[in-house]
Image (cartoon, rainbow, N blue to C red; front, top):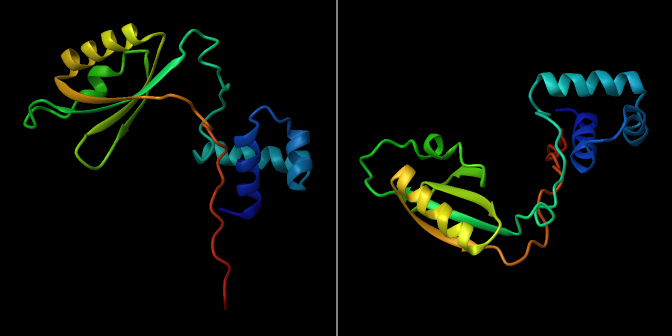
Length: 154
């Protein structure tokens, strides 16, 4: 990926609502050149979409937790993500290495709601879990900083 594309990705990661005019100004290209590059980045799947940053507390979902799950029966099919995909409280599901199979990021209104969600997760997916409740979030959803390739030494 070219350096200018990295700059475009970084700028849009920080503010997905930038106009093409503002983006062009930030990266030093014409508006039409930036528009073409953004379109190519979208077509290649580098930019997969644009989203609003949401205040979950204002939405009535102040409790965030991470739930590490693994199957109760290791011989059972590895289909927990599919079994749990319809639960709106689960924001993210990560396949992880280590003792656990998946790490779920969940958002709920209260400890009682978390308890109910954990019960549903256990029964629907046939898993055991370990839960970590988030006390505060110093930062989250940081803008992407595409790595810069090392400079040629030739």
